[in-house]
Image (cartoon, rainbow, N blue to C red; front, side):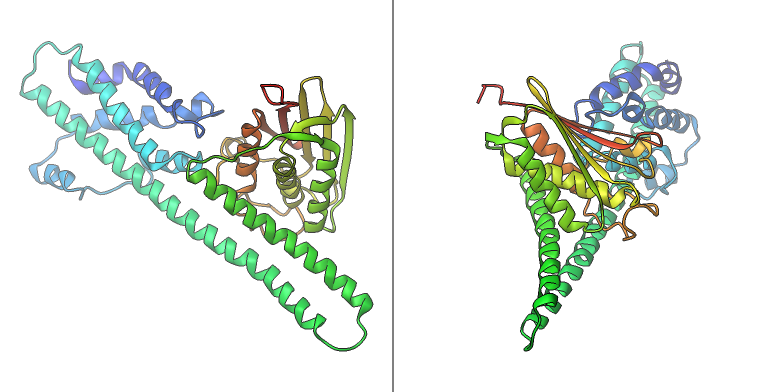
Length: 378
């Protein structure tokens, strides 16, 4: 059977195996829909089938072998690279997908080939050329997004640190001045506290992100704690970062637990400051906490522009920034894109899970569910 016809007749089976393989790439693929995982697989296969049947000169074949074939930044493969980057896949995982796709097609096709002749060999060569081209296009857009994300990250880091440092510098200049300054000193002190909390949060997120990239994960040390006190500390940090915002706090049930208090406070602080930044400023940010029999349920809610469904799939990936869209406190979005990633890592280290829902009726709701105690009962 001609390879192009085999691909067209068996696309669903091939894509199903692509889907199964893509699901092994966790945590990037965790929670992704079947549509998102399959992405542009069918279109990439259709392109390969067309390429096999397209006349090709010796010069064109030579250009392909040297990587000189023209790239199509709008091709299905190029878009696949962009979307996989946004979903938190690594370049190694992206390449592995194409390797698996190539192997799957050849394995399934060879089972139906009775005689290997010159035409069969030519089909295989043309198919491999097409997959190599698709991989090159996909890797190129993936790498471009990686470079852009890195540059954005560095720009945001420089921007966000410059403001607090300038405030600290002005505060220092004022405090060394002579003369009465009791009332003004109190205002300066509040400013110093606010920018210090902001900078400390950024540094903590960077350190935690670095730890996860080294493969160590985020360690948690559970101790007896009162969840109410942890929430109050997180609210204090959020209010210091966003002094003009309102925060509502509602609790119910038993809040005694065995958790890593500082880590869980970091989760809540990240969620609360994120909600304050992206939520509508004329609505309070709500923190709802419920102590169930074996589980602690924490919800952070805000009103405002809903997060698009496609963004919800990637929102917990590192270095993902969302547009404020005219909401929040009026500042430009300069989030490092690490807060939600860190929140997920700490939650999962506690044996829990974090989810997000967003629509015009409910607003945006982040829900954290963690066991009251560690699995061994400690």
